[in-house]
Length: 427
Image 1 (cartoon, rainbow, N blue to C red):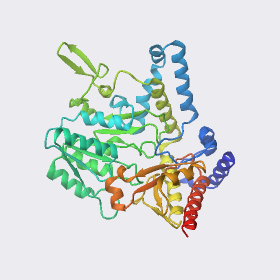
Image 2 (spheres, helix red, strand yellow):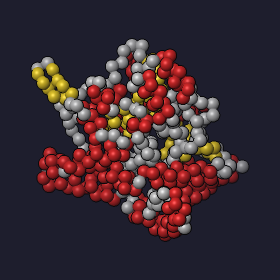
Image 3 (cartoon, rainbow, N blue to C red):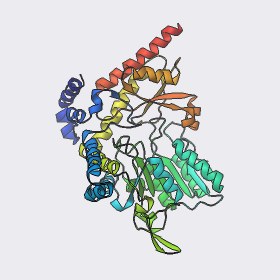
Image 4 (spheres, helix red, strand yellow):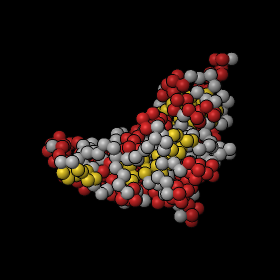
């Protein structure tokens, strides 16, 4: 069934070859991509914003390294696979337009984020300027900093048109409050909103402000260029749209930040050299943000996942993935009792909605019976956004480039069936 669907879709796409070739666009070979993705045989995976399906080369790279560790030892296997480990930094740098020495491996995007935060010498009264759509863990970290150091958290207002943060108002706050840190989440976990991070970055550069970007939901979905964004730090996970293993992420640290001496609060023997009984010196690269112990199989798997994304092509991915989400969003808006919650002119591939008459867990469990993977968001995930929308929960569906239009239609049909069944029962 899955193979037939992929072939039908690929044949349909082939009909448009001439127009696509003329525009310089690249076709995705969905048949090959789905054959590379064993999970496509079992489920309709619309939870890529949570964790993407591993591709065979990623799985194989990890298993081969674990087998090598079992045969010759962990330290020795890391030495043998030094080139593959090093490629994590080279591949990630290629993906986001940086240098390998500006990349640090992290256990997650949140791990990377807190390491970046810990390097900023906050003082009582310092301001963190952020938005009303920053990721929950980031907001909690800010509150923790306020509790411990007495900093002030300022949230820039949203634009009245629903396009995200009001950049002009945020820039004015930058000028008047002179924040110690500007922090923005590119795409929040609770909606498809895409924030104008490059526009914000230009103001940060003009005012020489430290700028931290959470790109957890955008790396692997959209082209990311750290120079264009103008950020000092950028964090991401590898498990979502990059389709890497869990427990992996990265931190980008701009060379100018490294030269200025920023370092994590707790730095270990990998990130620094003990130069005397009472002195140490951080290493020159972003490795100062890393610890000595690594999950080497996961690092190698992440490198393989990033290389896979680069081979597929981030440009065609960035066209197809949001287009699938737009198709789904259009169909959901036509279903009675379904309220689509995403805002902004060009939403990303995170489709959020609620359904009248349903509680969150039973609704998700009902979708599970259709072999449709999804995720739930609750009001405590997005205190500002969900309060503005007057919503207590939302179901999140997040397709990726290897999903098909037939799967989108099947998911929309399942949601329509469940919404209708609740209306019938209530009637």
